[in-house]
Structure formats: structure tokens, C-alpha cells
Length: 126
Figure 1 (tube, rainbow, N blue to C red):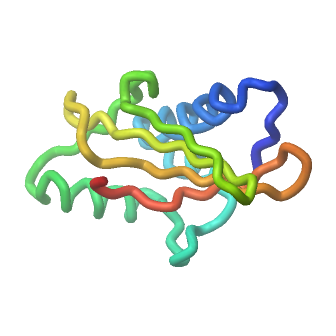
Figure 2 (figure 1 turned 90 degrees about the vertical axis):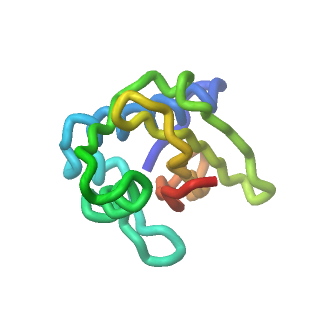
Figure 3 (figure 1 turned 120 degrees about the horizontal axis):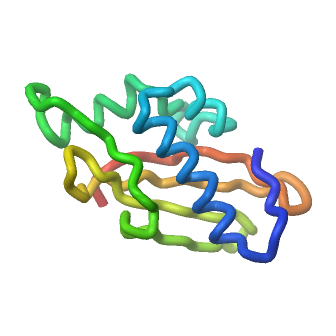
């Protein structure tokens, strides 16, 4: 869960997503997974196996994969507020020194006052 503590909602969501990306980029998928509260609506928990399946599908299995921890402002981020009070934040991954079309889509589902459940809805090419 993430509790929004300031009026700068986008900054707090970006910070949470940046922390997740930093863990993924260093290969600490356990720590990255602790920042996610629930599987998506399809029952998928986005761990190392699921992330690398998508990345290998994008690049091919014979390419060495290096996910970079870039500042999210450089990753074409997008922020939306849903009608139900939920929040969406997504960004593209930098892999092998290039900005890809692979988009990580975070959902922040409202639970109580300014507290949100964190879910990765999908990682795919938009």
C-alpha cells in the first residue's frame, strides 16, 4: 500500500515507481515485489519470470537484457485519474541503452483516505 502524504500526487506515484524500477534494474526482484500489493485483474504477479518473458518476447531470446534505472521523466511517463478515484501511472522501459515501447502500467486502487493498493496492470507495447 502507498499512502499519499502530500498534495503532489504525481510526484509520490513517480517516486514509488522509480523505487520499483531501481530494484528491477539491480536484479532485486524480491524487493521490487514487496512494492506491489496484489496481482492484476488477470491474476498475474509481475515478478522476474513474467517481466523477462515480455522483454525477451520484445528483443528475442538471444539478446542479453539490461534494464536501466533511468529517471522516469526520461521514460515518457503518463499519469491519469480514474473516475472511481483510482490512479494510473505508466512509463516506458529503458533496456540495453534504448527507450523501448514496453510500457509498465501501474494501477493505484483506492482503499481508504489517501491510501492505495499498488498493482502492475501490465507490461506491454502500447
